[in-house]
Structure formats: structure tokens, C-alpha cells
Length: 146
Length: 146
Image (cartoon, rainbow over all chains, first blue to last red):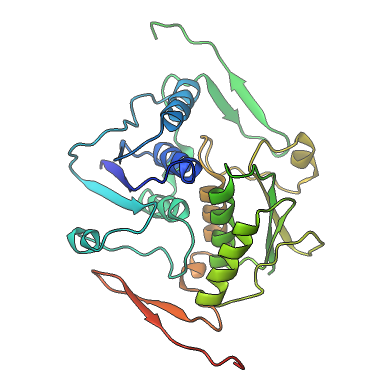
């Protein structure tokens, strides 16, 4: 199964953090690509840095193109009416106003049945070691050829 | 069960949208209170407007106080070390960097076993009518005394 995310709209500055969160959730929960129409350089830098440190580079590519299988469409600003009728499925995560970040996460969590919570990525420099108290991060240096 | 959320840190402008999302997820997923140390007036206005339109006013109060039962602590910026040792439970939602908004949503989703997705709130002016295509919102006028 290949899952991609289409992020519609991005209001400069105002949406920088939410768009970054959308990209991070997409990556961490196993999506292959995230498509955006507009994007700030700082978001690309943040995602690039996360892939450098935590692995899985090239799993998120910010471009516009075609992809088979599932494409999840989420808005920053209001989603145009056409999208609702073009979509094969119109999925609501609850019936209250909340967050497209939360909705994306819960949809992917249900889709992968929780398996995404154990994902690890290749070439990671950093890894979390589970601990009941405190925060343990394992850091390793990688050879450039690896 | 009473669940509250403690949002640590809030970087002005930069975190406005993510903090708003945290508050919206907390409300939509049934949390009684959200505690914050700093908050922008625009966030209070957004939450107030959501409660006016979608009901459940007074379920979210932005203040600092004491609460029994579960308190979920989430950071905007880095969470101070002390918090990890003070906490009764140190819960990781996956082991990858993603989003505190997504982590909060998935934690609450597991906690409430999906029941939160059907929540409705009293005094709602607006209600979503599920539909396979399109978006249907039912709007009703409320008497001031109700």
C-alpha cells in the first residue's frame, strides 16, 4: 500500500508550523510523499533536517505529480467544494472542528492499525530508547557511504 | 474520568496555530480543561467562537489551577527535564519526531476508545450532517435563555 498526502493551501507564516506538523506526521506514520502547492523554504529545511537525523530520507518529497493508490487531501484554508465531489471517499474524523493534523494522524493510525507507532527508518543518526522516566536518545555517527 | 491538558510554552506568532489546534483537539476529544501559561488573545477568541458555534461552552477554560485525575503535559518548545521525572507516566506516541497535536489526538483516541469521534456538545448552533460527498452543515438559531 502506498499512501500520499496532498496539503491544500498554505498561508505564509501563519501555517508554517501546522504544515511542518502535517509533513512530520506524514513521514512518521509511513506516508511516501507529501504534495504541496506552496511551501516555505524553512519547512523544507526542517523536514530535511529531521530526515538527516532520524533517517528515511527521500520518503517525503515536496513536489507535484501523480501517485497511484491512496491520496489523502487535507486543507490549510477552506477546501474547495470540487474536492468533496472529486474524492472517492469523504472521511470525517469526528464531527467537531479540531485539527487536520489530528485527523491525519488518527486516519493513518486506523489505516495502519497502530503498526506505524513502531516504525523505524534507515540511516537514522538518532533513536529514542524507551524509558519509563526521563528521555533517552541514542546518537550514532554514520559513514558517508552507508 | 476527567482529563485536562497542560500546554507548556507558547512562542508568540510561531505557535499560534499549533496551540489553537491543541485546544481544538482537547475540546473535540472531550477534555475538560486546558492549562496554559501564556496565551494570545486571538487563540481565546478562536476557541470562544468555536464553543459559541459548535456548543459545549465552558468545557475549555484557559487558566492555571488544580485538577484531579489525568493531566496530559505537552510542550510547544522543549519540555524541561523535571517534567519527565515528575510525571507519573512518560508516554511516547511512536518513536519518531512528529507533532504534539497528533500525539495528543492519538492518546485521547486510545483513552476514549474512539467514542470521542461521536461526541456532540450542548447549545451547538452548527452540526455536521454526515454525507458521502459534499459538506452538509446544519445551522440553527438558539434562544438566548436556552
